[in-house]
Amino acid sequence: MRDAVWRRLQATIGAVALALVLVAGLPAAADLRIDITRGVVEPLPIVILPFPSAGGDQASDVGTEITNVVAADLERSGLFKPLDPRPLSVSQPSLDTLPLFANWRLVNTQALVHGRTTALPDGRLKIEFRLWDVFAEQEMLGRAYSTPAGNWRRIAHVIADAIYKRITGEDGYFDTRIAYIAESGPRSRRTKRLAIMDQDGANHQFLTEGNNLVLTPRFSPSSQDIAYLRYADSQPRVHIRNLTTRADEALSGISEITFAPRYAPDGERLIVSMAVDGNTDIYTYDLRDHTRRRLTTTSGIDTSASYSPDGRQIAFNSDRGGSLQLYVMDADGSSVRRISRGDGRYATPVWSPRGDLIAFTKTQGGQFHIGVMRPDGSGERLLAQGFRVEGPAWAPNGRVILFFRQEPALNDAQGGRSRLFTVDLTGQNERELVTPLDASDPAWSPLRP
Amino acid sequence: MRSRFLLLALFLVAACSSTDADEAKQVATGQDTGAAAAAGGLPSTRTTPSRPSGFDQGGLQPVESARQLSEAGADRVYFAFDSYDLDAQARGIIERQARLLTTQGTINVTVEGHCDERGTREYNIALGERRASAVRDYLIALGVAPNRLRVVSYGEERPAAIGSNEDAWAQNRRAVTVVMGAAAGS
Image 1 (tube, each protein chain N blue to C red):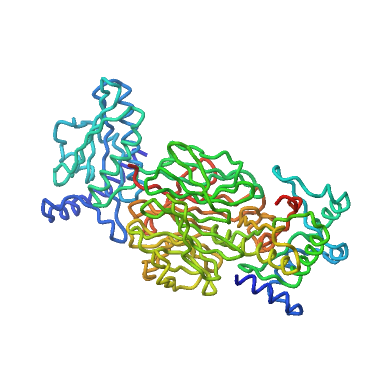
Image 2 (image 1 turned 180 degrees about the vertical axis):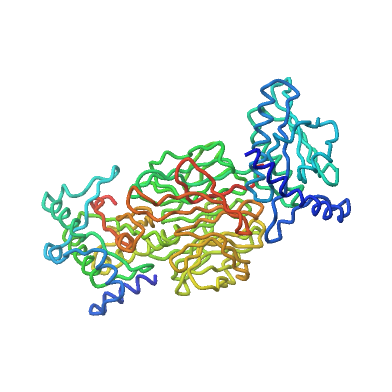
């Protein structure tokens, strides 16, 4: 592996000259930068040196673990290519001295991260790092954090977010969590449990026991609560689980079949679907006074509603026109207009946190697709496909979509696996997000407070 | 509301022609429901922890009949893809269920709506409710008291047949009438 990296570096050494020309042509202020609004981006080579310890051995191990997590976060984004630092770190720079930039340029890295960890007398950990532009020979970022020693993974994600933001100009999405439905057992008697984990799969835990069928978790804007669908006494109800207190309650005052919850951006209301006498419509539910308000009144199925980030509009799917299509309406239910125009059936619109795109599930010709379109329906692009792909969920920066992919089932015991994947908006960088069991219905938290 | 009007229309126009849904459903069932019709159809039994079965009040005979008829598929009707229309065969099964319910006044039922795996999860919950409501509405039109009927949708979550093929999907697009307990007290 190490040799392979070296060979690739040597083979591409010619690219250094080009990169030098490009960097030299920029004014000093416009330093190292990835423009992720472009279609396809070459990953940026970056060296992240293990953070040595200024204290005991334990802090030293943590320093290496932190840099591994930072490198894995940046690599998964598809925008960075962390180079294996081990063959390169013969003369590791101290945090207090300038790196020997000429040496780092030889290995064709454009960015360099070094840092250190220090065990503080009170038992906490101090973590410092600097980010350097190797060609401009400039410091781009320097930060220090003091944290309980057990919190080092979060600091690693915070560091990865800081590097991502400094170089791309966009907020990161690494200090976040994923809620999803963990599946096990034969398909005829599937056990489904609510589960939560860090964005990179670490710190996995189950939140329900599997006695009740649970579906479609969604984070609150504060990421402290999860609204989800739970069958209790053979009745599907929207429940809210508080992640801190573990309190779990059904929405009060509702006896009808209620599903498809999502939070309003202010966190004070949910938008839900309610099925009454064969007709599903969209309602808001006020979490403070438990009142509901009906927004759609057609005889068709109106469901899977999602607010725009400014709270002024709502996207949903409806078969009111004879086939399942995407619609947008104002938040009070007025000004309904259809936005999907292509062939096929469109469902599960989810508004990007940036507001510029709506992700959706499309079925056409026996295949499922995950795609995006602008809120006016223009610019449709399909990013992923399969026998079944569904449940798009946005990273908080609106650049990556998480979804699940289910394979065809051969019989009760074979096939039918369901797993999580991420794909960026180029559609070029699809990755599996590995989970302990089968997985579906993912939700992506906002950046953690 | 649309479904209810549609059902009434179906009920009144009893001699309406068969639809595309017939073919899919006949493939799915493949059962001889003639015997079930002669015996006067019964929903299947299902015990729940919270609500005991009401069959003790009716004696052994309904239990045996229910078992035989659920084996013959008389507790369930089938639907075409993305459809909640009741075809002639489905209406025949529901009519037998209605005869049972009007003669067995102590039985309450839940109609469970189900879907295949070819829709999105949330849409399927809505579609399952629509299918179950179509059966419920027809039972009401046939004289069953509304307070004896309950509707639930499982969407695609409780498949009857496993397999990603048209035969399994056709068996999963269904509404199942399940006996829940005595009418008194609900």
